[in-house]
Image (cartoon, rainbow, N blue to C red; front, side, top):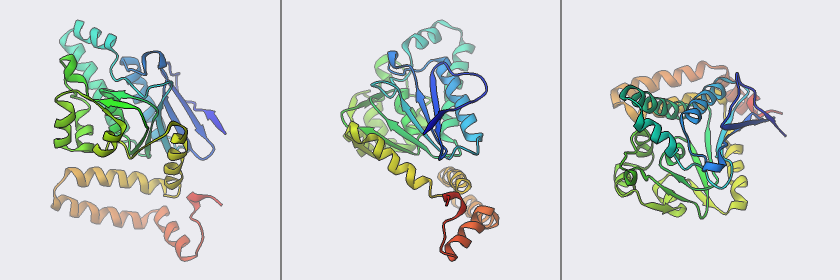
Length: 270
């Protein structure tokens, strides 16, 4: 059973629901334009990320799109408005996009991409900020910005972190479209499945994540960012402190006690 997710204000471009387990579905809701995003979508995604991240009742977030597409990336009408605006407005619009992607990337909950259709440009960037993404067979993808005379700028830190610089050159420089099978090979998708198996494949990921302690997941996401962006000396100190901190948490103490007592830890329910 799912219910609408209540946050301050309303959303014009998103649908958010949460089930009794704490699994929230965050859906882009502009199917008439293939879930392309503009300034409203960007602001609402940022606000949704903050609300879901701060809600202790939310344990997993599933990001998807309504209709046939996941996301066509930036709305060309938004691009037109950016081109026609002044330099300061263009900088602000670009910075807002970067901040939204960062908010999703740093979400302290697992973010699972349910990639229900094609994704281009910034839509592919949204895939890259997911912790795990599963897509449908037959969907097509592309980092198509150069074919519009633009750059995949804001999404590049997340896409390159996911697929590596060499693979980024393969797909960013030409802007060519590629199939779901290549998205798997690149590392953008964990797997591509028939459309009628997409929900089951996503649910399998969700079920595994619900076995893990919520606070430990958040700390592990911070750990991964730290280790990926710092040198050995910094990381040795950080990781020593991180493990010591984990031993002191209620989750750590509960998890060890549950293992020794051969029972489920509290976060797994009865």
